[in-house]
Amino acid sequence: MDVKVVIFDWDGTLVDSVEHIADSLHQAATELGYPALEREAYRDIIGLGMVEALEKLYPGISREQMNTIREGYGRYFFSKGTTPQNVFDGMAEVVSDIRAGGRGCSVATGKSRKGLEGALVSSGLGPHFEITRCADETRSKPHPAMLQEILAFYGIKPAEAVMIGDTRYDLEMAQCIGMPSIGVEWGVHKRDVLGHYAPHAIVDSVPDLREVLGL
Image (cartoon, rainbow, N blue to C red; front, side, top):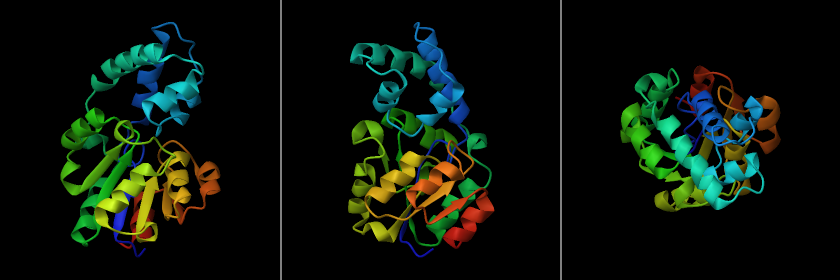
């Protein structure tokens, strides 16, 4: 695939964190008396910013209530740090090889800046990324603001980059500005969902991703 920059989602794409996020949301909300939701409901909002995620999970929630859940979520989530072992097998090498081949590499994530900064260090992936954008410093997915800011950093057009992600929010974000995308099936959403957003490819293994990227 002939692009200058590869943009990755974080949770569920580079790092195996989906179930931990779902667990942390469930525990934070239910201990405050909010109803327990189906597991898939917690998984489905992964990729959104926390404000947007909680509004979708608990419609009508106030900002004060939201902040209380967020505090509890932070306690649960950060009690378990990201390590190199949490990175999906082969993805550290994918990122390294992208940079070694002269292409740019970046992250667009629904995580908070605080959460991403810690994970960049503890996962060992941080040095590979030239720019990262988070939902709490710009607009949440699927709005394309994160991608537009990354493109501006590199001075390139949407067609010169590719967005790689495991959720419909990732692929919809790219579709909004005509950026090619690649869906990966080892995270939240599967082919039947990802396929609605006209991805360049959908892959179910890291070797397949390497092939699409030409690594």
